[in-house]
Amino acid sequence: MTARNPKVFSLVLAGGAGNRLQPLTRDRAKPAVPFGGNYRLIDFVLSNLVNSGYRRIAVLTQYKSHSLNAHIAKTWRMSQMLGNYVSSVPAQMRDGERWFTGSADAIYQNLNLIRDESPDYIAVFGADNLYRMDASQMMEDHIASGAGVTVAGLRVPIEQAHAFGIIEPAPDGSIAAFREKPSDPVGLADDPSQVFASMGNYMFTTTALVDAIVRDYDDPGSDHDMGGDIITTMVGRGEANVHDFSHANDVPGSTDRDRGYWRDVGTIDAYYDAHMDLISVHPIFNLYNHRWPIYTWHQPLPPAKFVFDTDQRRGTALDSMVCSGVVISGGTVRRSVLSPGAHIHTGALVEDSVLLHNVDVGRGAVVRRAIIDKNVHVPEGVHIGVDPEADRARFEVSEGGVVVIGKDDIIPPPV
Image (tube, rainbow, N blue to C red; front, side, top):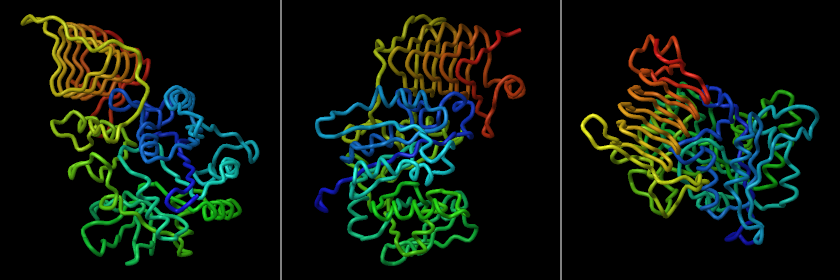
């Protein structure tokens, strides 16, 4: 392959348990959590890679992976004629009867995939963040740098440095230091009020990655983590470069407002806030960029339906996203996301909420500031998000006051 057309193999790390998203991850891996009505979190990274022209992708899974594996098998089918594929690879215990001990160990236990593909370069991306990225532009930076690894860096305010792994760049674009959640961060030379936070996305030259992974496996003191161990070690050896995602990555169809958008939705409140952005009048993350689509599998459902139009019984949805198969039957929906198959009955009120697939809200029920997972029936007259004390006695409530009800949970009728 030439430098203009390198052979690239992509590894997507999708084995995390996602404990901070409980109860949404009670029965599924974090990358399989639904988002934005139609999608799952894994769809965003896979869409970025496919849109970038990288279509040989292995998704490394581990915890509660059935729904994730099923979604990938059903959704991400590509023509084998040109060797394109997205393959879900569960933990195979190739190194004895043990699970992955870290993200680097996940790659070590799947080195056979790299040997089979024999790529020139390897993209190693996380599976559960929201963003648009042209990975080919990052690859061009990586090839030009001659480094062993290039790390995607997101510009964030320096006061947020304590929440991220922070990249300290040298003047030539190499990485001078990589520090995990520093209390004394150093601002960027061109803007001291900002720092580079690692996005957890990496481009490796294949030989450099394999060498680093094997060395790490033999180190008894390692936690076998991509950021904390592999990247830190390669930075120390002068083998790492930074890609400025905020300024140097230009996705077709993006605007000044959404360029550089990246969000970790690893907590209930972050997940909720990301949905509330989607339904704002001018959302930062634009799902309507048709030049860089987010792909998924759509259920064969009929269009949404709004029925009844009397003063006491009118089906309406305002400032909301309403998916296929939804029926709003005499109820009212405001500032909410209704996933496929949701049903809102007469007199019900849903505000500032996220309802996942097939949620049924009974007559006269009230749902406010809530996330309700699949297949939950809200009985007639039940109030959720109205009385904080009553909510905490019955449901899980986030630090930000968002009520969360898990998949298939049974809500008792009002006394």
